[in-house]
Image 1: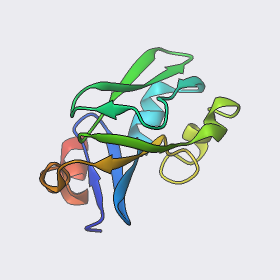
Image 2 (image 1 turned 90 degrees about the horizontal axis):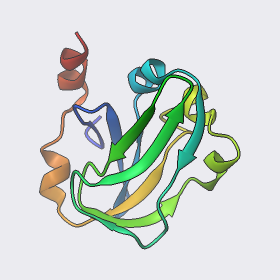
Image 3 (image 1 turned 30 degrees about the vertical axis):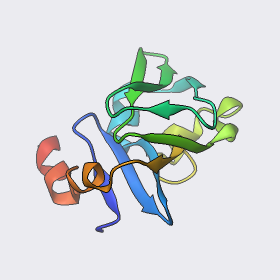
Image 4 (image 1 turned 45 degrees about the vertical axis):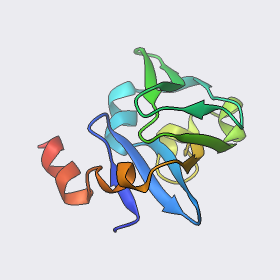
Length: 122
């Protein structure tokens, strides 16, 4: 699908009306194991591409999710604060992390499409 892109760090981005919803891929949640805590940014926070945006703590490790594109946080998935396991159960649906208002469409277009991401996993 043209409206979904991936990063080499195993994040997914789904283009919506005027922003992108961001989460980690099924592969990433699998590698992390059981997720026990998520630290989300505040609505209105601005990030440059590559800047640490979210912290995910699992039984195995603590991982940072970097902003895959520059933008301003429009929405955060507040349900993860009480139920971080949603990331394990449904990483591309109920387990999304943040919605960003993108600053630069070209940053989205330059990310991996589904077949390029599958090649990365092999």
